[in-house]
Length: 466
Image (tube, rainbow, N blue to C red):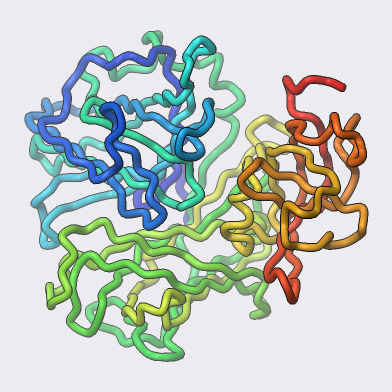
């Protein structure tokens, strides 16, 4: 089985960006063109619509030649809602490439970026996020123009804001990481460096779709795409795993450009038993959207399916996508063996690299099947037995209790956080952290009701003691 160790993943990778020590505008090459359709508030364009149509775009001209990767300093604002709280990170999709090259009118790659919040304690707003990303110089395709575009990935993501100066290409010494002000020194990176990101191509592929120029097109009832990964033996902890997809989508036979859709995904074990399911939104960044025949131009879409149980990679699994799309569009989608890539994070057992995904109740409620049977760290407030906050009943026992954050609430079954009590008014609303596994109960009246099977519950650090 072929594996590659990467610092980031081309196609639809995940890049945690190192924090910077300053929040000012960087010296370097600024964009010659900028546009956003986000909501303009005090010089910043906020991407926050539920339809995920807000975006921001930059075009750089006269990028200096060189052999090194292009380093971009990104400054953004982030909060959890309109007029929201401080201290939240910025998560978004970054597309980069050379506009106007190739048969698709442009050549673009995609990565997922997470910028840490770097607001100092005396910042009255606390929205500032900042960091650096590196992209290969090959993205210029031997030219000197670079196009960047950002968009939110999910409706559950924090609101993010950008302006023309949010993207700056660093020149000269600003590109280095050794001893430069605002970068993380090697001694600070020790724990993180123990984790490794692996990418694994599919071991097998099957489709009964219509084969056209190497792409299997699903466009009738019963058509499917299916990728198989054999068991992976690795003594380290599998922290997170996801299948990244790069499929083609169009609106009809001989269809147009710029269309995306949502597809149903099933995860099967080696015996063919379904062990997980969910949906993937296939996002098409190509514009303009055009309904007529574009002869294949503008068909490429991107999506990702996180495995609810990362240890599925140890037993092997199949990922199956079936037609029709679950959003009712009826659009055609196509793929091939190399259009799916498994990416996973492996870390030594017991090290700080083996961290759990940190989520809020709304994340789980927005897509419960994506988190089903997945171990998470849930951050929220203790709400004890205030059952009126949700339409779901206690899932296991009458002693099950609620955790939430003012936007959404789910039940937890297991021990209460140490020192907190459901009948003590002083305990209600205290910030807590819950470590446990997401389970799901179908309730006849309330529908899907996810809940947390608690392994550990504790007051959050810094919360006032009773």
